[in-house]
Length: 328
Image 1: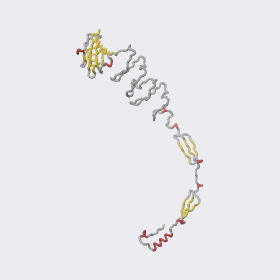
Image 2: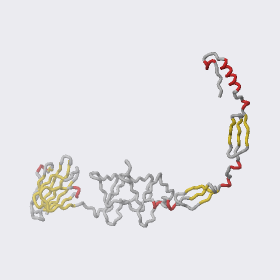
Image 3: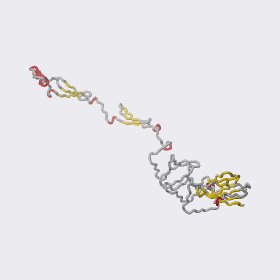
Image 4: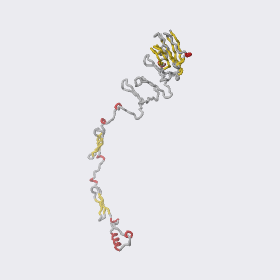
């Protein structure tokens, strides 16, 4: 590459030699018409060359007859036998794609739900108009929540064909209304076992409230529970919940301080039998047990005495006591 010297680059006026050299350099500068392009014969993959003596660029196109182009009919697809998880391969010599499907016997698929021992649903189970049933003869269908969860039925329970029981032996079957709702029975409440008792028990000290008229169809077997206390002496533990009538056979002097679990309004009648043992054991009343005129309780010789005790105030332990003596 030739360079033209200027006053600026020289820093001073040019000498005669420098000016002569500039003219010489200008004569050797390349002009646009000094460059040309020519095309050579196709060869190989093609090329572009330059001759710096003649200023000629020579372009050689690629020889397409030597290239290996692929046509659509050079490709084909074939299917191989199932193997493993499946595969797709290509043979670049024959142009054949080979597809081998997965072998389902080796994959962790399930064919029926009973193969999954812990199935889970990702959404609601829609049975349409079908039933949830079991093919096991006399088999149970159990719907069991975990922990304190409940089984909820948002629609009306139309028919219960079987028996409602608990999965726990001797466990309670609780029917609880939601909020202030009531549990309504459209038919008679009966026991399925012949001659078995039908018990309706309140929880703790709660009461069983009958808000409408009560009709008792059969009074032939209506009787109070009688608790036998024999032989007894010393301080008596009277539990009114065990029955309102106590048959007492004394074996020594007795003391009564009230009920074991008192509830205001409870009444206990004691039939004291001194005739059986031909004895005459007295009864001492503790504080809070009040008698007419404060005379206490009199027990006769070798006879029967009737003692009635009523809890007036369970909080403060107040009772009223009366006795009728010498039944013969």
